[in-house]
Image (cartoon, rainbow, N blue to C red):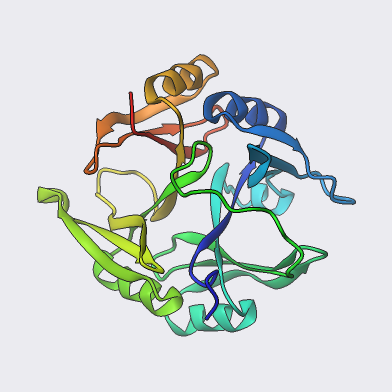
Length: 258
């Protein structure tokens, strides 16, 4: 398998107001947004230090009709999108959008794990020569978090799909275990059974690295974002906060300093 198989390789915000969302995240995270220049596509790129980090687009009409709210979507790299989509079904997951090509970019599919947490599969066409930046670099996505339908069955699903390795488990008391997982020897995220108090179906959340947490929170709330949990210190000394943006998309911030 390639190094990209099982790695989160892209992130995408689908929302109702791309102009407002671009201004919000540029200010809060420190990204620079610009039109992608893709022919026939209204697609914005978020960059940090000139490196592409994520994309932004309007929620498609068919998704709006289905009542799908603004949300961030994570793309996991695979060696073969069609084979991976087939395996998703074999392991009890769902393929929401069958594999298809993005001309000049690669091939993707939109899927969900057995309890409904949505993500995407992706394989590039080899034309992307953008440099990679450190996982903990400001503006990058530093952590990936699954609020799972059932940790005991969802963790093996992702292990089988992507080769993720079970790492340290953190005892959260009555909330259960927060299970860290690794890709190619590096911790990239954690997952736990979603607490019943969270009024949402199982979901993936992404933590954006910022220089200082309190300053980013102040910018977020000034622009209409809301804090739903935190800030709080987590093992390792980092500080995190869980938020929603002005259009209602859930996101998280992480920093080593307040």
